[in-house]
Picture 1: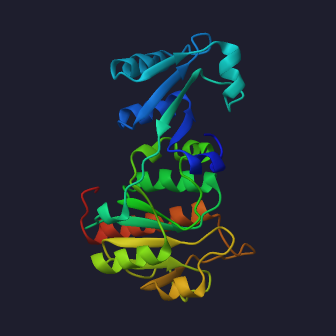
Picture 2 (picture 1 turned 90 degrees about the vertical axis):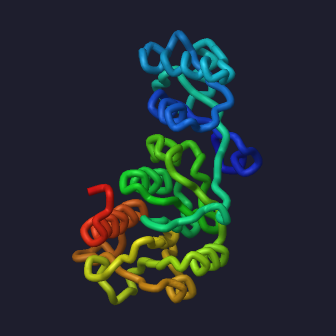
Length: 254
């Protein structure tokens, strides 16, 4: 349950740490089992989480220190782990009438995906579309990168063509990014609602994907660097769109 190959074969996942499990319980994410070690778990909030889980009739599994350390992925484990159910929203059930939707095309790095999910939560995104062979958001490094934001975001697995059909059906605007684009990202409009399309770490968006966009913008590179890390670039774009929306549409976040 910790690696991507296993995650593709099951609907459950492994998580570890007081903050992550606290977020999962707080957002009513479906948890099958809480695993804890009394010898290690000395944090009061962590102990309270075990009791909250018990009150919700979640299975509680107590193990000793040797056993917990044998499966923990942390050098200094906190003594609290859990098995949860992966949850994805079907595309046909995902309706949007305002806000930002992120579409990520074949993102490979779990850390990047987790960081993007965390930033999406910060700007209150409507949801995240994972296109094609994008890494699983429930991979352990993705969960860690999201800092628990995975439990507050709608995640949809689909493909590029299905996304385009869905976009057309809902009359949504699609903005992509590319270093080849003529338009500077800060000198354009961003309709609300909007889909932000980001390409993979290695290839970005191809010509076909860029042609499908209503507009493609570039983030200027002023010195020797020719690109940004995907999670950083997505964060730059998300806050640019978010700020445009709250300035121009008097969004409720102001």
